[in-house]
Image (cartoon, rainbow over the protein chains, first blue to last red):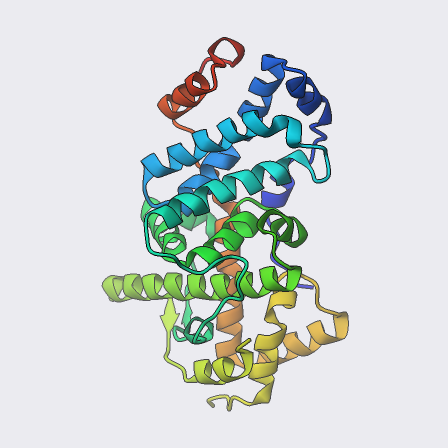
Length: 232
Length: 85
């Protein structure tokens, strides 16, 4: 079996927050402060990946916890507290994004596409390891830029599933869309990011030419074959 | 010799989402891996797709800057209830 596994999922404790939440609902500020400190990095990471502007990300962070505070008594434990929190944070991010531009795709609508992002164009066998890449600030900046360039309906799914480490079902619950819809959007997002990183590593290989890199490249017409069979 | 792409490449693409998330049945998984052993382009696409996912999942969270944390705590009126950083 060859699923992609990393430590990300394991890093998300699925602790039962019910005691803290109940105490916060009774008005205990220490309990609410503990919830804030437990989840602020997750909300901030989501906000930074969703928003291009750091000030917007901070606004989303504040709006999320203000909204959690105001609506804490509306939380009845139908979902986990973290799923409820992610829903509020994602909505805050999407509302801010939409306030800044003309109406765009709704998450409730089927994702329409001409299928271009499904076509692998760059067949670049980049040999960099995650450890090498993550130590390299230029690569990390490229990764962030690639996420920021995703259409927002794909970005939200990718950030929740592959950056925040939610399950497919949890991602569907947060966004209020179906599991198949999550899977479709997630795959499109991953293909687009792969393409973007491949272009980057190809460019890096070109600039490194003569310095013997581990990256090999050759062009391919495989994309058209992929493309024609995978439109949804 | 250059591999001739055929319907298997397209079938592979259709199976990729479940394959990447480890939700493919064993026999389908074996068929995919047999194809990857034959088709260099598909292997590269799948390898780099896996690497893309691994990179993002392995990346550390964005740390909340000290000043951002301080402003959040102030807005929530929780100064006296949170740990100082």
